[in-house]
Length: 229
Ligand SMILES: [Zn+2]
Ligand SMILES: [Zn+2]
Image 1 (spheres, helix red, strand yellow):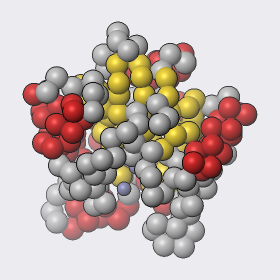
Image 2 (cartoon, rainbow, N blue to C red):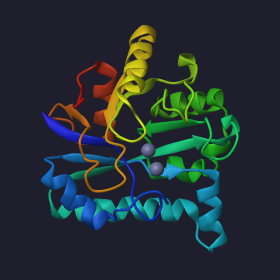
Image 3 (cartoon, protein in one colour):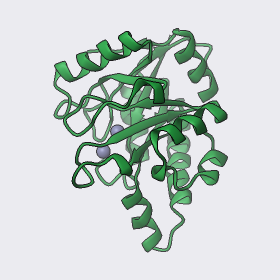
Image 4 (tube, rainbow, N blue to C red):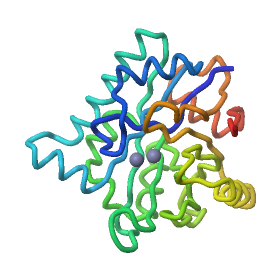
């Protein structure tokens, strides 16, 4: 089996993340990971932040990915492209109020270039786009205090174990697990890595999986295993 981190943020693209790709590669190696999926926050306000500084936000997004690939390669870890999209239309109150965040697995660079304003979509539109593109939409931490579960008809799965300790007391993860089981949704687990010490979850996948398409397949066929510690 291979150990993979499924939910990871890097500085500076995710403003809440502390570590940069160079250190992340070493941290993950030490924790025994073989692969990682970068899932930086993709929000309207972050998009505008980079735009105001004269950068193409999609270029900045991909720059973080390429940097992670580069440093992970040095320590023999595969780094694959993913994203955590924040669907702002569902916010209640401020930007961090109850909201919908969705991890996408199976995207490529062209997908991002074709959909730079993906955060504007409704859950129905996002699901349709993902189905058309062979991408899985997994809602992050659906029962966290700052989230509300998305109708299971409009996601492929729920993140049922999010190891971020401050934000996910055990009953929050248990609720997500029960709901996913009840609705026959795909289940994922991840560290929601922002800083050193967060690298405690992830998933186990068959050794043969060697790209993000393979990861998508093993989520679909049930051969990926949760790490709940
Ligand atoms: Zn964050
Ligand atoms: Zn996250």
